[in-house]
Image 1 (cartoon, rainbow, N blue to C red):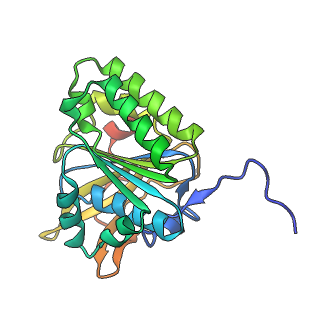
Image 2 (image 1 turned 45 degrees about the horizontal axis):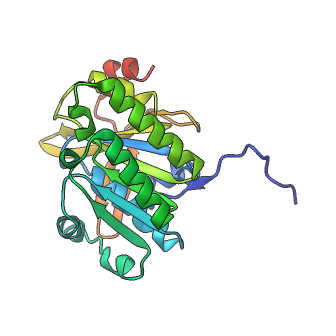
Length: 247
């Protein structure tokens, strides 16, 4: 049997049926993925499915929350049938929450380093990173996130960072700064079709693997999330302002 080439890209499954299939196994291992979307579009639910899958595969996982309490996250996830408590009880899934307003950028970076070194996770979710951009010093924010992403890469930790966008909003200047840091960027959009509200997911970019800009419906079923077929609602693959932001 031939050994795979040394530069072959390892993948980490997300647990999202359809997404793992179109990516040939999941997201790039040891890389950081940004999930951007409006409130209620499914960012946290998708990210927590990813962490649950990592734990079920025998690895430890870490959730760093910057807005909601642990109990609130548990309640939100249980509403979609995602029971995380057994994984916490088995010390596979670790939760840490802290308000971004309570620390400066450098203090946050030091805090995250300490938690990661203590837990030793294979997968991590930071939810959301939006408040980091409340500072007018976008250069300092980008520097902090760059060092964080580099740290995660050296530790070979597969990470998902969520980023809140306004409903129908254009990709802001901050997104241009973020896009140059992240290896993979997924966008969740709410669209209306024939009176129904739907969530669609597509890749804005992925530096490490081949991908399509094709929009697909993100469907919540009794068994979790399912990435459906390509949308046929007359929508372009990606808005022009999105394409400009990631160049």
